[in-house]
Length: 269
Image 1 (tube, helix red, strand yellow):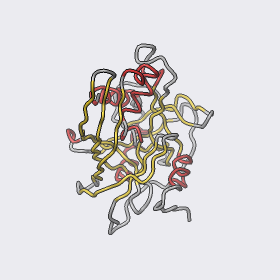
Image 2 (cartoon, one colour; image 1 turned 180 degrees about the vertical axis):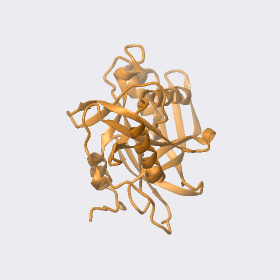
Image 3 (cartoon, one colour; image 1 turned 60 degrees about the vertical axis):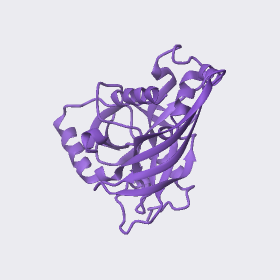
Image 4 (cartoon, helix red, strand yellow; image 1 turned 90 degrees about the horizontal axis):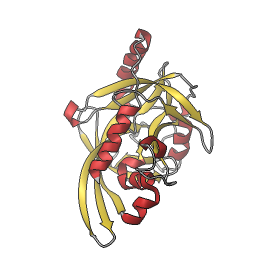
């Protein structure tokens, strides 16, 4: 099952970034990366999976994976894509009734480690799940001695169709967890039932769910999350994009969800 999930995430990573050669964009992106890169952290997740099929028994195992998160408060509160903590929910969404009938997948996040920009590690815990927005909030179990670099949700801005945006990311262990940036355009804006941005499809690019998205002026737009539907069709009934879509969730919605946590420091002066 994890192999299927890794394939989905890899497809998403290849699908949401389109390089733009304009030198001015490159310069702005490099400046943004230097200023804001430490707002992206790596999260090591230990997930317990229970998979069963009718008449076929079941199996349980623990898997370890890495995900990205965006720091949204000086005390180190992190927001990430909830889908990264529950890959089974994504498969259920893609497969509609077929997967729900034939395959039962239950997952539980049992451990979180926050890997800091300097490589040091801190224990974390999930403090809030918001499945409507595909958000999970992680906080360190022990308070940091120093304030953390963060993106200010109160300063979120809107973008328009065909506006360029910069996505910051932190690569995996194979690349030394280096920071990365990519540029794409907003290809569509969905207004109902709630507003979100759809990034352009392109070839390649270093992006990941949980990555913060900024406009060309370095202002925070939102974060990459996953939108999926269980409305039928299944993997054989259409393309992946028919059932699952990476989107940019606006900063205002992340702020609304963050305010439900106990330790969110609202940085609105």
